[in-house]
Length: 159
Image 1: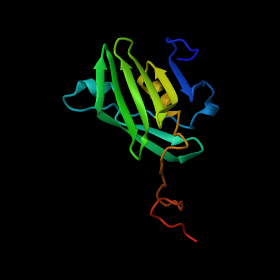
Image 2: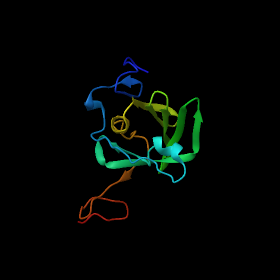
Image 3: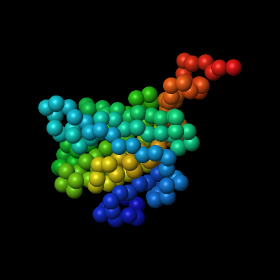
């Protein structure tokens, strides 16, 4: 995993290149809520969802949702896949190492790895994961705030 030691607080790579320079990242990182399913404690090391924005236009975003049927656990490693709710070609595979108390995430588009993040603290891990942003090829949704005259799907722009 790159040139940074496993003991580092975080690690981020985009398309196979290690990045520590914020210029290469999306402008915002997001911290999701934990996935709390009553009676299923094992899922609490995973997030409710994952939000990414497109670095060239923050109104474009993609929400990735967990596919609970992909959950696996072996030798203290928990794994689950998240998919872009609007594009099945875009996914994130999250791992949690219970022994090391460390998360690892890999983002893919068309089975090509587009970025990875690694970290030992929930908030910082997810900030660094979501700083990977949307891949320009994946389907994204457009956010238009109320009262905005942008071209939100289904709304016509005023003359």
